[in-house]
Every structure is written in C-alpha cells, then in structure tokens.
Image (cartoon, rainbow, N blue to C red):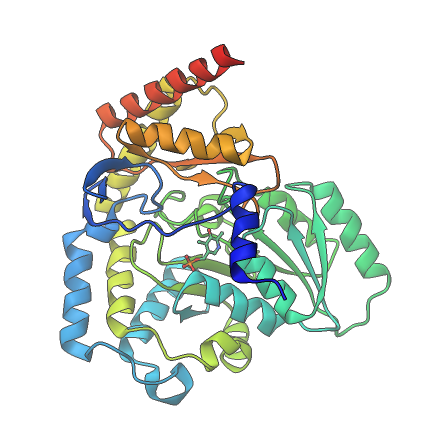
Length: 391
Ligand SMILES: *Cc1c(COP(=O)(O)O)cnc(C)c1O
C-alpha cells in the first residue's frame, strides 16, 4: 500500500505540492505572513467588502439576534428568517421567482448539479469549468460531455448527438461559468442562449466571478446582458466579491422546490450561521447601491491601470488576469521572487489549470492603490525581462 509520505514526495518532485500558509494579520490589501507584509494580489474580495463596516456590523447584529449556529439542517429547524431574507432579496434582484442559499459555492454546485441530473441524463460542460461543477457532475452519475473552452460549435455538435437518441424525460444540463475563474474571460452566453431555440436543455451559469464586478447593479454577466429570463439557474458564491461566505442559486419556484427535496448538501448538512446570511445580504445591498457602483468604478480603473503598466494590450475584461508562465516550477519561482519584493500573487498549477499552463493568477481589487498596482506591474515586467535574458 502506498504511504501518504510517498504520495507527497511525488507531488513535491512534480512541483505540485501545496501547503497552507497562515496569514497572521490583514490591513486592507496588505497581508502579514511570518512577520512580513505583502500587498495581496490574490484575493477574490474584489470590492473589499469583507472589511466593510456595514458588512461587519450586519454580521455582529446577526449574532446578537440569532446566536451563532443555526442548530439544525434547513429542513429540520435550521431554516431561519435570516436565510429567508437573503433568499427573498436574491430572487428579486436577479429577476427570478425564487432563490436557495447554501453554506458555500462548492456545496451549492455539488447539491444542485447532482440534484438536477441522474444516471439517465446528460451534463455538458465547458472544458474550463470549475472543480465544483465537475464534481457535481461526477457525483450525479449522469453522462458527462465536455466542449472546448467557449467552442459553441462543439457544444452544438454534442447537443445534436444527444437530441438524436433522447427519450422525452431525459434532462440535458448545460453548465458554464460567466467569468472563468483562472482566465478571467467571459462565456459566450448569448450564443449559448441562442441554442435554446433549437435544442431543449437546462442552462446553469456560475457567476462566482461575475457578481460584484459586472452588471449595472453588480449582479453579474447575466444581468449585464439582460439574460435572466433565458438562464434557468443562476448560481453564485457569497465568499468572493460579496466578501462573506455562502452560495446560492436563483431559479423558478419549481426548481427551488425540487432542490429543497434533492440537493443533498442542503438536506444533510446544518444550515450556515444566520449571521453569515445577514452579512451577505448587507454586502449584496451595498454592492448594488451607489456605494457599490463607486467601488466598481474604482475596480475598473485599477484593472485599466494594471493593464497599462503591465503592457498588456489584450487583457480579459474582469478582475482576474492570468500571467502565463508554463511550467509549475517557474510559476513557483516567480511567486517567490515577487514575495521578495513585497507582493503576494499565487502560482496556479495543475490540476487547477491544464498541465503546462501554470500561471500567476493576478486579481485586482477596488482597494489597491495606484502606486501599488504600478509597482507590481513594473516588477512583473522586470522579472520577465530578466527571465528572457537568461534564456
Ligand atoms: C470559488 C468558486 C466556487 C466555489 O465557491 P465557494 O463559495 O468558494 O465554495 C464555485 N465556482 C467557481 C467558478 C468558483 O470560482
């Protein structure tokens, strides 16, 4: 039998071993590790809401009002007014009949995908879909088909094949992210929606990195494109731009009622703390208010500033900017060199991204200063130039 140590050794040799790093303190965009401070270019807290006074206050008030834990699963006695308020707000804001919230985005994907499709059904995913969606698909036992990233032609081919030998009750689920988590580019949602005229399928869109960043009210790409009528299930997390924790889906009343019966991650798990729901609600309200719009404006200015100074002419239109490296060892070296200069930016390796596509995943927030962004971009360019000289 192989030992854990042997397995870890193999990961180490492939430069794929991961380790937890403890952040000892946080001050705005600065993080402290081992007594040293770094400007953080790795957080998904795009609008800085995790530190916002109103969000913190809502969390504290939630604890005073409800206590700390929910005490039971949602279907027993854990479904509290706090969860209800969050779901009512989400449904209304997203233009759907109803909403359902979960402890986090991962358990949302797991419960919803495996609750929606089973052995007789088909799930079709974009190749770059997040692990949570893939895991949900695997857990469901449904037949899994994958189309190349944003390859609508391939998606259509698969839909044609599936339609050709399909029985009436079979469900076909098409899954994509709106803003892709490791590349920062967008799904071609309008093209996918157009396919609904010719093929019958359920469309689910994960807005993990669209919410807070895109849309007039910061509700995501579906809002920005005015597609909420055509996307059957809008999914998101409350742990990224919302700055708290949690996950949700917005859909028709029937789907929500179905997931209340079928999503095992909801049914067999204690409800998340009510204060978490209230803090997330405060964050969402902020996000869609004028104050949120101001932070979003600052965010986009910062993205443009980074793009300018890093000499990136073709940059994905989101807060996520991949800095391509290739080899895992090189990505780790670059991460270390940046740390020496006071910047933290995570190296992303296989299996989070395909083999030989290791990269830095740069995330920009509204809270970064222009000076920090310029210095960081400058450092990246200097390190790249040094690398080229060595080659
Ligand atoms: C982070 C992420 C999730 C999971 O959300 P959590 O709330 O962090 O569990 C799901 N989908 C995508 C695309 C993500 O990036």
